[in-house]
Structures are given as C-alpha cells and as structure tokens.
Image (cartoon, rainbow, N blue to C red; front, side, top):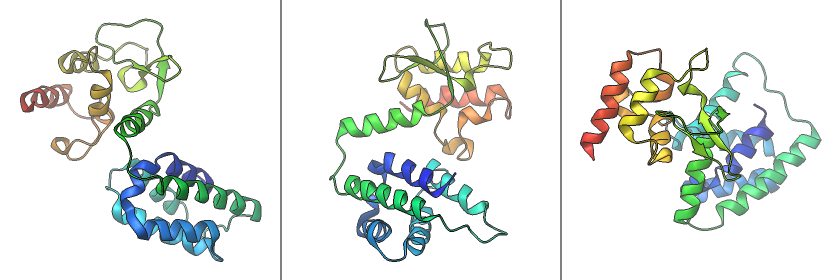
Length: 211
C-alpha cells in the first residue's frame, strides 16, 4: 500500500487517532505544511506504531509498508504524490481538530470497519448466517462464514446462533473480527480451519457467561 493510500486510511479512521494528542497534531501539521515531509512521514509512522495496539489494522498498514523496504532504500514519492499526501494530511488535521467523537460517530466508525471485511451480497436472510446492512441498504454476509463451495461453515452458523446474530449482527460481527485475548489476541474469524471448531464455539459460549 502506498503512502497516499495509507494516509487516506488514516484520514478515514481519524476518530480513533484523536487521542494521539498534541504530538500527533504537530507531526501531521509538519507533514501538511513543513519543508521536509519525508521526515514527517517517518515520525508519523514511528508514533502510530508506538501508540496503536499491536493487532490494530492501522498499525498493520504501517508495518506492511515498512516490511517492503527492509532491504531496499524507500522510494521517495514524486512531486505530484507529495502534493496529494499534503492535501490528505490537511484533511486529517481538520478531522483531528474536530473535537471528541460523538456516540453516533463512534458507532459509524465501528460499523465502517466491519463493512471493510470481504463479503458477498445476500438477497434474503438465511438461518445461522451473519448479515450486515450497509448504509446504502445492501445486505452483506462476511466471506469468512463460507467454505470453498459457498456453503455456510457449520461452526460459523453455530456461533452465530449462540451469539444471536439475527438480533445483534453488529455486535456478533465485532466479536468475529476483533482480537480476542482469550484466543491469544487472535481474530476469531481468522482461526476458522486453523484451530478446532469446538475451541471457537466454546469461547463464544463463554462470552455469554460473562454477560
């Protein structure tokens, strides 16, 4: 992912970055208006890798970009790309200055993250299937629920029923797609076919016992 694409992802997730405080704002301002944006970019990367959780998707974007340049000198963006980077940095700066996020903004941000998961369009609900409704009204079933033949995986259907995906699809999607400390910080959806199905089902049932 290019610096432009990474910065655009940061801009879209700006609500989560506001707690970064004055240091973050200073660096983004330097990136937007300073004489050495390359230095500012490196400072921004180091700051975010320091303050974001290890399993955070935004941190993953930055690590991915760093990994590609381990054995090679990073390529300096062309002048036109720096202009786009500076424009995005100004938009990010405005978002950081917008004040504390409202409850509605937090909910919208969380749902936007969940809707970024690969999914297939669904015309009608199916028993045991987790379906999310996008802002445009389209219904999407996250892809991790399906096997290679397109059938709903039994473990996904069981856990969706246990957790009540028909009543609280966003809450269930958040469990599937967020790191779980009881699973070693791993994301449940990424463990289908990797760990025994019963381990995932047991953790889902344990979640209900905690409520």
